[in-house]
Image 1 (cartoon, rainbow, N blue to C red):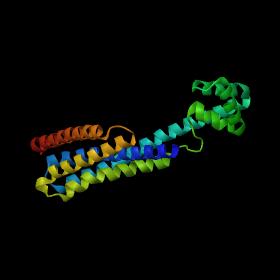
Image 2 (image 1 turned 90 degrees about the vertical axis):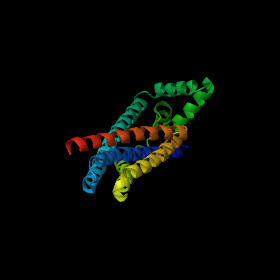
Image 3 (image 1 turned 60 degrees about the vertical axis):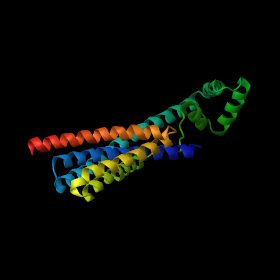
Image 4 (image 1 turned 180 degrees about the vertical axis):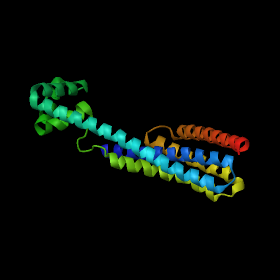
Length: 226
């Protein structure tokens, strides 16, 4: 079950990263397309947005996961020290935790004693802190995965707006992006156990409003400042 949970969490993170890439990059290229009919500014904006977004996502994820891993390692060291200095108190604490889960005093004592004899540290980390010492997240893997998912999502609107005929590139990109947002929203909700349809509608409506605003802003500046 833990392995399945980790895989679903990884899938959800990838979907959210791709969703961010789709929304932010689409808003950027559609906004620029609203200001000019030239292809080069749109391409430059799209590529710059992809690179900047991927770097930002990867750095943010690296810092976040590093902080989490450091905190978990500190908790493991603290628990190891407490087990070494006051084993009786730690055993009693473990018994209390199992009692709080609904076990009788006798059963909780038996379970806690047996697990302590087998691996006291792992028993406490699991029940008390919910930490698996063999499953610390890797900041590097998280950073690379985040950047990759952002780029995969962001490439869609860039390619759509560059490959579509200039006269209809905005509505085509708009439609493709909304379909992609609906799919990623539904997949993200499914991976988290939520209702896919509601999530798909929510992210699609939000994306449509955001894209419309960026296009209107780009058109305004293109008309008045161009």
